[in-house]
Image 1 (cartoon, rainbow, N blue to C red):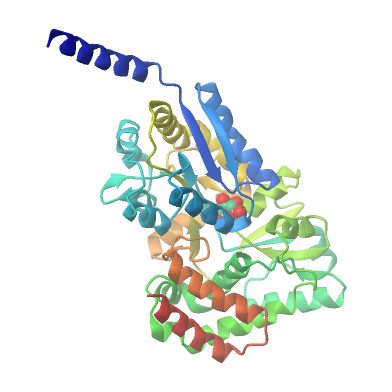
Image 2: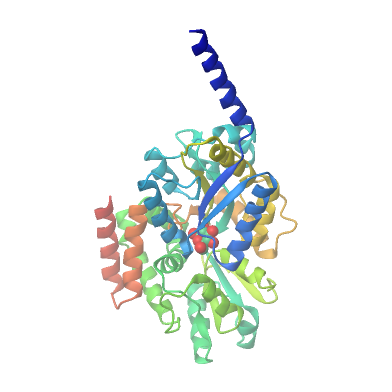
Amino acid sequence: MKKLELGAVSAIALVTAGMATAEPKAEVLHWWTSGSEAKSVAVLQKEFAENGGTWTDMPVAGGGGDAAMSALRARVLSGNAPTAVQLKGPAIQEWYEEGVLADISSVAEAEGWGDVLPASIAGHMKCEGSWCAAPVNVHRVDWIWANADVLEANGITMPTTWDEFNAAAAKLQAAGVIPLAHGGQAWQDATVFEAVALGILGAEGFRKAFVELDEATLTSDAMVAVFDQMRTMRGFVDPNFPGRDWNLATAMVMNGEAAFQIMGDWAKGEFLAAGAKPGEDFLCASVPGDGFLYNVDSFAMFDVDGEDNQAGQELLAKLIVGESFQTVFNLNKGSIPARVDVALDDFDSCAHLGAKDMAASADNGSLLPSYAHGMALRGAQAGAITDVVTAHFNSDMSSADAVQQLAAAIANSL
Ligand code: BGC
């Protein structure tokens, strides 16, 4: 009996000693592989290492993260989840429902996340009231980027309506410039589509279509007009667009081969990494129409064994929402901090414009989640929409057929 008790005591001592000496470790799955993305995630790796952490990198190339999400599924199914994963929007809730996420409420409460994050962002990070993800930033999706010299040489200013955009694009095309730099990948088609949709449907229409999946809006004349505009845009891309990565499309704008790109502000990260200056070398404007499509990157921690892994998750979560990381990371990434208390003094004019528009949109009800970047809908519904958008963009499908297919695909996915 005595021996047993002693044994129990030393086991507790061992566990306690183990906790005290836990060495934070993390295997981190993410899809940040372009030049500016890699530079941004390196900031987290550095802070993690400076705080005693050992980082195992699991980058999965592929803009928008589709390939990363397939890799994640395979890892979780084989019972070997990574410790930390770039995950966002409703996908966080979907994984939570699978029972595989770790609860990071102790870090969130100790660090006062509730006081420094806007309620709209905090809502995405909570699963049934507990904290299940840590937000990194706010990316805006509905931007147009342009090469300043190319516009000036052709007597064009940033378009403020889609008609102006079409007229500018036609003029550029006649002058031998590729009007729109685009990469034919489903998520890039979806990115352009939702930007066009916001402009043509308006904020309320966008919400009805892509948040509420309202059938009348999905099949409305306005939605037909959205597909018409997509057909027009198809005429403004070069023949080599299929499969092109988004950052290569950004490079075409940078080197003057193309005039415009419609892409989230991770594209600005690429301009800045190349030393280009906003307002001088490149221009930024929100796409024609009112509203703000947000895309919040975040990390979720998966349920894994081992003191070291758990210590790694806690350290990562703490650093991610920390003020210094939120500043340096977002300066490189092209986004703005998720925290409301981080000063934007060092940020460029596009970031200031984004922050101002975001505040105004929050006030007037036009702050909306991006469907193309997994903030508005669950995977099955978002995927159903994107399939139709891509099929339309890459064929001669009529706009009327596209809206019918859209409504049918969504009905099948529910
Ligand atoms: C992510 C960004 C990323 C972009 C391109 C988006 O979905 O939110 O962080 O830079 O995809 O990969």
